[in-house]
Amino acid sequence: MNRRVSLRNTMLDWAKAIHEAIGIESPRLFIALFALIGLLLFGFVGWVIDRGYRIKLREPHSDSPIPPAKASEKVASTESISTLSPTPLLPLPNETTGRIFVPADVDGKFLLGLYKKTTSVQADALAAFYIGKWIRLSAPVADVFTQGDEIFVLLTLAADTRFALAILSFEAAQWSPSVSMLTSGSTIMVAGEIQRVSTMSIRLKCCELL
Image (cartoon, rainbow, N blue to C red):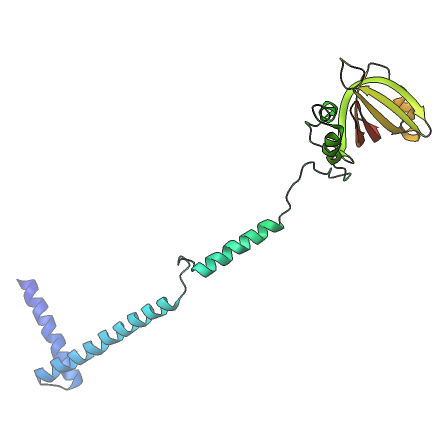
């Protein structure tokens, strides 16, 4: 009870002080003045809130959907980038020498197999794709001989026949010491450029021992 009386007295003291400060004794004028002040205060707050809302509406939204025209332009730009990307082809060039090697599953037997169940004309057309490409071969040595400034090695590609050979051409000045030491029946690994493919043999040039 005492707390209520104290609060009431405090409010009366504040009201009296405000009356004396502004010099208004009429209660109606006092109430009207405070109503006007409140109206101005709340009006200013409302104006600030409304202005902030309108400014926010003018800002672009990052999560807004892309218009159809923009979306089509985005797809077109993506497709143009993809068309500029290099498309890998097989066989791939060697990064250090620029040589184009055939895939690993293309060996001597595969190349000779092109001439099975096809005519020579058809097989030549199939083999033409591999001419000028490089290949790695591993097979037993059948013979070694020289001719001019080149030294040749014959490899047996099939153990059940003598008519499946790889004829390898080496530059004698560089490879003669190593190639001359090869023995018949020993298996070697070589790399060479495919020069010719026929029914019974393939011919490689610029060969190297690996």
